Amino acid sequence: MGPLLAFGFWAYVLTVAGIYAIFVLGLQVHVGDTGLLNFGHVAFMAAGAYSTGLMVTNGVPLLAAIPLAMLVAALLGVLVGLPTLRLRGDYFAIVTIAAGEILRIMIQNQQGATGGTLGLRKASGGWPSFNRDILRWFEDTLGIELERRVPLLVITWLVALVIALLLVRIGRSPWRRALRAVRENEDAVAAAGKPVFQLKLQALALGAAIAGVSGVLFTLLQTSLYPENFEPIVTFVGFAILILGGIGSYFGVVLGSILISFIISGVRFLDFPLAADKVAALRFVVIGLIIMAVMAFRPQGLFGKKEELHLD
Image (cartoon, rainbow, N blue to C red; front, side):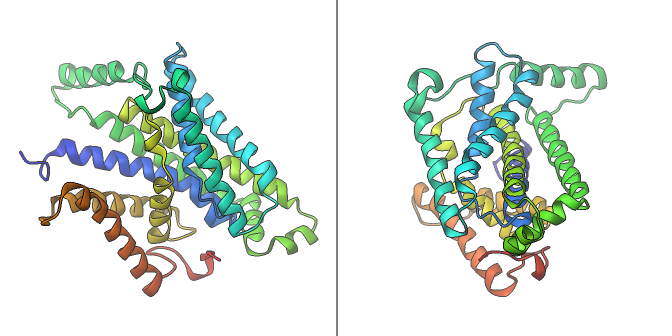
């Protein structure tokens, strides 16, 4: 069976889509809810991924490592936010790109701890063994032979659904309304006596923790981690998903992640008279054209509302 028809391949693509959905839900908290133009969001994903990998390779049980990795990502958000959140617009965006690259280069140069460019091997700990146990249970008990990627696919989308539902519930709270007021006019919020800096810091920490979850799931998917997995292009693909789905729309993030993931994976099956590296680059050209079309004809995205659009 060719890759185009192989269920295992598309199960992998859907798992990646779920990881991106979680990643961009965190970005939605920053950009859509608070107006923080964070171009270094991948740093929080890397923090979650490498925290998980380093803990499990040093004997920490995976179930204990996961919440600790989320906490590390949230703390990184606080550390980045404390000196930078008083900056606005373009300045904050530039600083966050720098923060993400600083973290990636530190990981790359810490050969002894992180494996550097050689990678952090067996970063998923006991997950492969647990995955095999799940598959064996389904086969022995229910007589169902599952593809090996199915357990993580289901777990990833369950996590994405839970996070989206929690954010929807938070969305009805006074706290989120305060965030949106900060997004619209933080000077007016400050004049009303609201703690603008604390609100922005809380939003940055929450979005970072969610991105940390995506890093954990990425670790389980890949089992080995490399610094090049966390280059700035990951954040910009996240922004493509956010713009396509709609700023302020959690449902749009989920659908946008699926569409973008299928576009990235599907382009490789088109018959172009180009070398493999050129076809790989063409995927991002296609995404760029889609984003240009969306911004030209429906700037609020597929499921966003014009009043939610906030890309100064």
